[in-house]
Structure formats: structure tokens, C-alpha cells
Length: 328
Image (cartoon, rainbow, N blue to C red):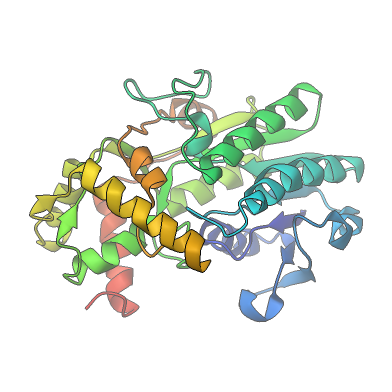
């Protein structure tokens, strides 16, 4: 198949691109900066910006599938409206333009965060949002983009919406590779404090890629799927890390009140100096106080989706981190 994709330089996008190439598909990738993209293999690179449709919509012609993975995945941006331009407006414009160009299958990568916190029984695709609070611009715009995408589905657009959990595994060290980024200082002995995290849904990157491939190459009966993994709270997560590495969890969990105060200081410094926070913001601390557990039963049933255990996934990730020089 001929596939047009955005987000090919991201953590998930780059791993999906590799699998598309290995499966013999012809891929055109929209890239903001080709010099920094470092895409390998047989891929046609189109220079453009997802928030500027004029730079790419004419290239939709002749493609069978549109994969939209591009998003602004950050805890903070100097211009907050950039979240709206990339995550909401560009998503709607790209989906409409792809359909207008005759593309018969559109696959949009949303996020677990668009479904909201679980705070109890793991959420499914059918559940309504249990918490009306939107904690930062990323959560806000991913939620609104998901609502817009659902409206487009109801209007008849050939659109699938996929919701990956917290993705981890070997791959590009982008802001989306948050588990690896947090493990590096911990494994190198530079993170003495932890946070008393509630349940999060950890999914191995190869599982998510395989889920995407099932949708891309098949004809799934549903149009929305959670692509998640195992649900673990902070204690269980670090116990698994200990099983893999023998490294004990952080001796002290920082109280959320103190973490929030430190995060607010980071937020104010970011606004004052126009640079990204070096640690968590107070908004992210509020997200960390909640539970984000999800149920992938529909994908398991309808896509033959497989879940790698957290332990097996961490064995591969940590081995890769060591071999790549990130961990001593």
C-alpha cells in the first residue's frame, strides 16, 4: 500500500515507519526538518508542517492510507496556542483533506490522556470521561482533538482512532519516550526521590506498532481501540525494575505538595525566561496524583492484540539503554 504519514520522526512514529518498510509498504513522510529527521530506508520525505496544510495536502493524491501521528507532546510551550494549532486544528484539517483526496483509510493516534483518568476500574473505549478537569494544554488539546475526531467519524469519515498507553521501549529519545527518560537518571543513581504514583498503563512500543499494523492492513469491526499494556502503580513499577536490575526503588517519595510547589517554581521560571521546564510543572504533578488505568480487551479480541509483560519489556528497554550508553 501507499501510505502518507505524519510524526515519523517521533518515538512511536519512527518505530512504526520501520515496520511499514519491513512489510513492503511505500511510505511518504511529512517532515518539518529533513536534515534533523535521520529517517533511513526507502521513504519519500516531504518537507512541510502539519499545521500548514498548503505544504502537504496536494501530496495526498494516490495514497491508500493516511497515518496521523504528529502531535505537540510537551508539558509546556512558550506559545500555548501552538498546542491548539498542532493537536486540534491540524488534526481536523489533515483528516478532512485526506478524505477529500480519496484516501480510504485514515488512522489517527490519539492518547490515553484524551480518555481521562480512570480513578477506579480501568477505562474502556465505551466509558465516558470520569474527570472534567483538564490539567495542562497537552491534555486539553488531545481531549478536544479526540472529540473532534469522534464527530468526524459520526459524519462518515473513514477514520480509526487509536489510544496508546504510556509507551516505553527502545527508540528515539523524544518527549514521548518518557519512561526511558525517567529511568536513565534513576539507573545512573541521580534520582534519590520518587513520587507515590497511582496506576499507569505501560505498553511496550512493539505492541503498539503491531496494533497499528493490524488496523492499517486489516478491516477491524470497530473504529476506536485502546492499545495498552499492564496497569502498575509506582510501587509495582519499581519492584519490576528491581527484579530486572537489582536496583532498589527511590528511598523517599516526595510529598505531592512539595513536588507541586517545586513544579510551580519551574513553571514560573519557564514563563520568565522562555525556556522549557527542566523538571515537572505543577500541572503535571496534578496529573501524577491520579490513576490512568485502561482495558485493552477490545483490541485483544478484535485485533488479536498481544501485550508484552512489563518485566519482559523492561528487560529489552534497559538492555538497550545500557548498550546505547545511556546507562552505565
